Figure (cartoon, rainbow, N blue to C red):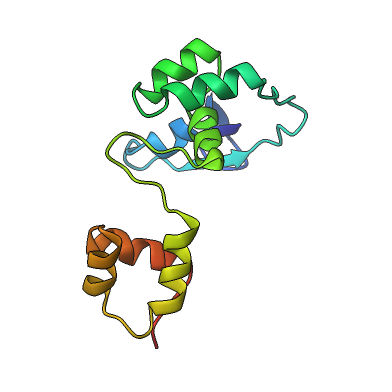
Length: 141
């Protein structure tokens, strides 16, 4: 949880207590007003474990339904649902998850093949391949 304050450390007043998602959504602040964000340790908050029924529901519906719809049905946050889906290797419709075979191909050939050729072989857009190479920290020198 984050606490957003104004006025500086000495005369701070709490403006808002909010989640990480709303902090990143915050775009503008009044002119001449300093805003400070303090992280509040919420490690004492108990995390709800995923039941097998919830995981099955997620696997069945993640590609077809909005993440927000699934989150409200399972009584979880959108971030929790998206995180669990990524952990399970699930992807939305139209998105193709990276297979181990694809990742091995990238590792083996990123130095000797241009990105466009890698993209053509993997049937993906060049930008997607570049992004994956970056995330895997596979750089050309």
